[in-house]
Image (cartoon, rainbow, N blue to C red; front, side, top):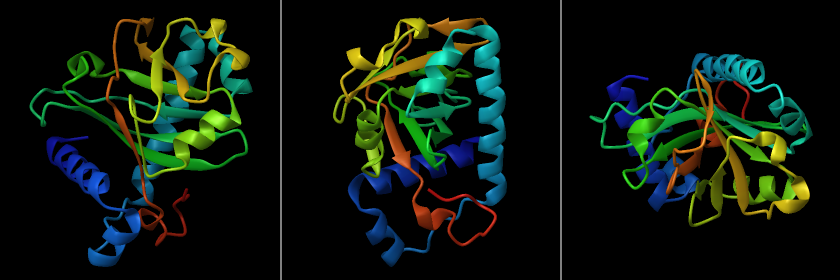
Length: 203
């Protein structure tokens, strides 16, 4: 994702933060996300998940049992784009539904350390999944808490409240526990962004 794309993404996030999807669609021309971009996200997510399983084999059992998994294949944080880390990913539900998200993490977190990292949000229960995807935007600290861990094998569904989302951050060397996504916003890609194409899977 280049600088101009990042600025466009941040602008879209700002709009989504103050107005509803319906209102934007009614008053402004829809910003289309091409099928090729969504296919790139899917392909990158497949490769990133495979890399996680190669590095951390014990993560597979947790992922397979989860109600949903949000995969951000790569975060970008060059430091010259509005002081944020940003990325795009796909929510894959056990029921087979795919929903796409943009993510922005602001200066309140150690955003520079996120550059090049992959992020996984694990929804251990249907309640936590529903709480996350019920709105257009989900914000850490406002709608729930992202709990970064480097030990997925220790996660148990019964011990996690619905607003508590276990989160993995993957580097080339493995999982890390010292980074933060504090204040991160996850913005659902509105249906109209892909609905005009029969080739693009829509949320």
